[in-house]
Image (cartoon, rainbow, N blue to C red; front, top):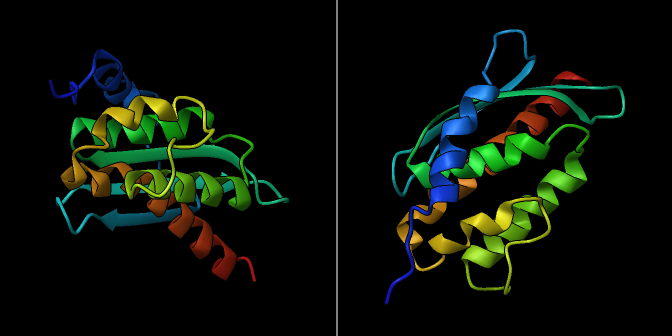
Length: 144
């Protein structure tokens, strides 16, 4: 029997995105679109002097899995720097590609395990993580 794709936890996470609104005053913003499914995620963040996230907001036009992934990211992003965010993104990408047995250590990330057998959803799941790193890349260009 196939695993349930949209678990109650996934649906609850997707609804929780309202807690992380994207506002115009977040100085580092990036928007990405998934080539595989058309999902769009725009993130904004503010960083402290050490490059750690102090504020975060996003807008996700994605399936429930993409929204849940964004909520998992948003719930624990405060205090994170580039290394932690890139590591979490890379761990999740390796898991979805079948290159590791778990999705990593980011709190709540294991909720996305139900999507492993659905590669068409993987792009949407990775999108918020990729957009956040893209926003960090833009911040590095504007801070120099």
